[in-house]
Length: 607
Ligand code: M6R
Image (cartoon, rainbow, N blue to C red; front, side):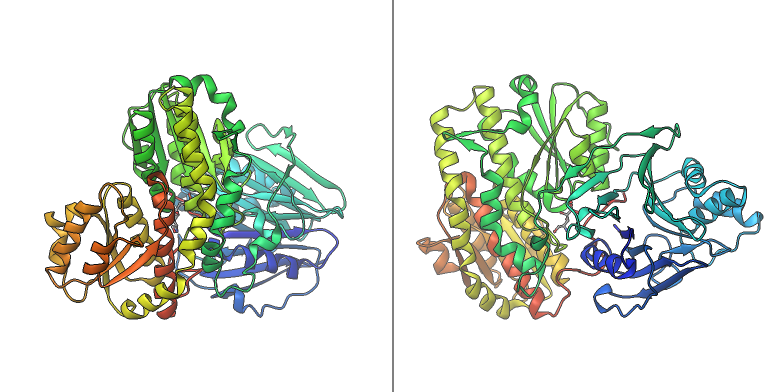
């Protein structure tokens, strides 16, 4: 949440950080601001609204910090937008995170004469640093001292009119430093801020600080001890062109359409001679042979990816698999020990609740495997092993290609553990991997239905409510379909286990409430047909996602969206595609801001 984009080097800094900020707008888009360091002052410009419409003009400077905000403390106003200035306007700071003890700190600072201009928790930090600088400390030491006094989470970037430096600090909120080729440095909440300039990145860990000096280079320090530390440079594999819309109207549509290639890359090199080949988890081999239980922790779409995979994992491994809302998990005193494998699923690798859940599991002795899309992310780094999705940057707030690649990878993980534990024979594994290798083509077939889905969207986009229903592994797909519709079209949608309808929600059904059924020709087909009949008997419209040749559903449903026939384990991956497209076209017809839906941010880095 919130995006930070900064630059220090030999170029004109404002246009560089503004471009980085545009790339980060998916992290928050209430308001934004830039500060540039001039020889005698810091100039700040702020605005409420979207960066895409930016007309901010700033003087030339080689040092700039900038920020796009997702409001936590204080309304969406120019005064609350970052950067924030110290009283003497010699320091400017941008922040991502939450300063929990800001009320106490603010009182103390006000008692010392500091005047606050905003309602934010962030402003406390810049006044705190100002106290240190007034006391004679250089900028870096003042920032370090302030960090020690702050309770909560932060990624800070701070500049001073008196020093040719930028100080960057982190605790609990992500921050990456891009190492340019001309002795210049970029700072971003994630690498998309600077990927078009450099693929070399350093990720600060918690309680680390970087001091970047113009013309001199960069040094890293431990905030607690004050000692210098070494950091390793990571080479980012993403192609910067992937972070562009490439002719599509929205990032979401682009990302839906590129799922065949994303799945292809996710499985590439991870199947050898028909067997899963996951070198990333070799180090866990002994543990995986003996693990007794799997706990999957995640949020939102990533949670539904885990939930979808639960059906296959339990069936193939005959191990208990539990799906946990990461946000609930750690407050529940979970029963987890060193016999449990925790799988943390997260596109961004920065979701605060998922990170907290994985730390909880680790504390209790569990080994943690992460499935992440963003390289070098905190969840990836803190886990015992990580498998990257390789889906390329996902910019649209609504997660799509991350989901299908997460489910594909979880399937391979399941097969790998199944072989290690001798729960599944090689012949069956080979059948499944062979089917998985054909999946990109079959997802293409599902995507080819987009015109007919667009027509269906035209029939229903003015409705107020919708139900999404499915049984077995199609139930989490229904949940995901409902989430997609809610978040981008602002229609009320509920996902439900189809057979549970009779226990209450069926009361919602009338001519105005369509039901979307995920009803492929699988083991639950006949039973689900019964649930479709129940809706029809109450005059509800039914949109069915099913296979060609499924004549019974074609006869009862008002509209049918066809998906290719695939092996049972792979059905969820093709079935989710039309639901993504349906949500997309409905939202587009409703003129919604699809890539940046109201109130949401792509990466939820606060609890
Ligand atoms: O980055 P993560 O996968 O950890 O994000 C988890 C959720 O915040 C995310 O899936 C969210 O629900 C999406 N907006 C759904 O489309």
